[in-house]
Amino acid sequence: MNPPRIYLASKSPRRRELLRQIGVHFDVLTFRDGERGEDADVDETPQPGEGVERYVERIALTKAQAGVRRILWRKMLRQPVLSADTTLEVDGEIVGKPADAVDAHAILRRLSGRSHRVLTAIAVSDGERTRSRLSVSDVRFRALSDTDIRHYIATGEPMDKAGAYGIQGRAAIFIEEIRGSYSGIMGLPLFETAQLLDAFGYSL
Image (cartoon, rainbow, N blue to C red; front, side, top):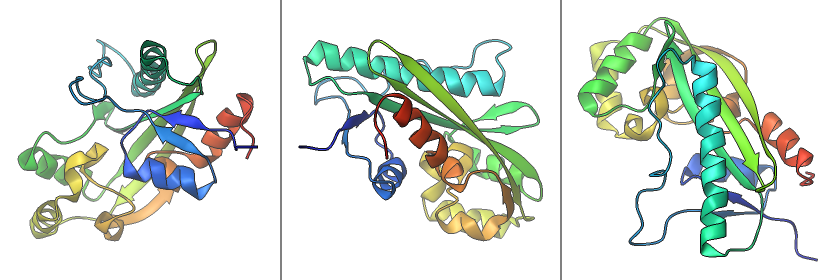
């Protein structure tokens, strides 16, 4: 028998790597040529007064549901859709991906020498049920000099990552301490992912 498969509604190479690490068989669910951007049907704008926990979970749920709609529209094989969303919280404020190098510098300067929270929500939907889980971790940065920040931005690594850094990359040298899920900080908390997939009949 062929092993069970899921769809991953994300282009993130880090999430692909993490799923492979735990033996999940998956197909990446993306737009075809000529369609709009990957998450064009997901509005990631925070709602007025929305807390960061609610925000990140709402986005993950919306991505999973959008993935199911995509499958139905294309008449694809029905498989559960896994989605995820990662964001940072500093002083109660949602911090996403940097808009440009100047924004990345400002974000990293803000993270320097202090702790912040990394929140990753995951969601799975099969068209009938949609469920989510939330992983919250604390990360402390050492003090960063302007030279540290400039050199890191020059690598290009911060530009597609929430909070303008990747824990699995060069930014690891900035991190004094983490409390929580390393894989969650990368973008896919594997403990919660395994539990959620198990609830949909995909046992690992």
